[in-house]
Image (cartoon, rainbow, N blue to C red; front, side):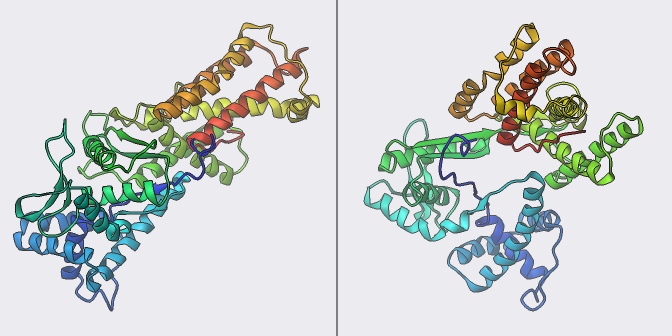
Length: 435
């Protein structure tokens, strides 16, 4: 969305958690479980199971926990063995990330916590020179940012290591200084809102911020249909890649049924698979994006794959219906909507449904301004749904093909598909021309 309105460049940064306590724990667990890791690299395909096993030992074994914490300091100091294991674990993680990025058609630059490790000491030194550092119990270094916060930002822990506060302040300094960012938007779960408010307040106090905008978007929790945190039947966290593939599987089964009933306009299994992927992945995206991100919501395959209501499935069907009308106009009546669009003939708006459709289309600039103000994509979703409903009413109330107003109404169909595709693009939804 920001790229579309002219922000240039937009840095799509994935601030991955590739540093810190959890890696100290994973490093120690790998050393113990795979002592020959250097000569025989372990084949760890299930990272979730590996992490859970390491976490169980971390919580149950005090000695293991202490060594894991010391590993963090060694890692942050550049210890060769720790760095070697850390590289192995990051490479495995990256392969799993790429599976999700590919399915969701996401382009991001990985710039995780480790990137900022050598940038933390100068930040601490700058706060010390500004007289803002307080030495806390055990020698830790903290910054109190003032009301309403009573706890400090911990820039350095008592063991000499760095935590989230250290990394996020170094990241903020880098983005404001090196990247010359005019607007920084951080997206995390809502529980980190106070943390980023403290970081932003510290940055303002020390003088890093002039007219730049520092914003945080906190997202809520995905709940199961039972109203509890979304998990598998065994109680495990649901992997996003599995969730996406299940949506595609269900969509494919639905399309196969429609093909048997003669209701689908697809010719090959390959095309059916492509359409199922486009709709399945889009359905999951849209189900999330159409809500206020700060609220919790219940995850439901049945709701997200519904052909009625405010779903990606409904929107993509609405778009395909308009494409079908324009295709028939060309094949059966010799009237090409693309050529008409270039000629720009007069458009008649005699019917109420025609006027309503145009009215809905004209809301786009206001919707974009609203979205840029609060950064909530659900405004675009609401607009897209309103346009789709108006378009469905228009083609139901007004005969397009073979009518005296055919050219005018084809132009309305064309304008609507262009607006819908613009929104699909902004939301990262892959449209299809026929279903």
